Amino acid sequence: MKYQKPDFKCVGFLMRGLREARGMSIWDLAFKSGVSESNIWRLEHGLLMGQYHMNEFFALCDALDAEPYLVLRLAGKKKGKP
Image (cartoon, rainbow, N blue to C red):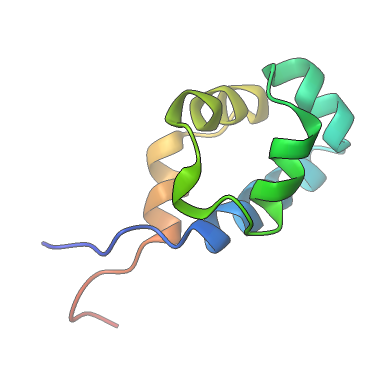
């Protein structure tokens, strides 16, 4: 099976949804993850795109109690499959 690269705007949308579902503010997530508020905001608004550092992505997933591979899988699409 081949997968497209994750849509980074979709990754940001998913991360924002996870944060809001857990009742966390951007400040709360920044404090818990060690990622700056500005980077979280830019990720959630699709402004970081491919410039994002994986260590920050993993820190955010850890702080949100989310599995990184599931976030990336949801943000990617199977090639040739609906």
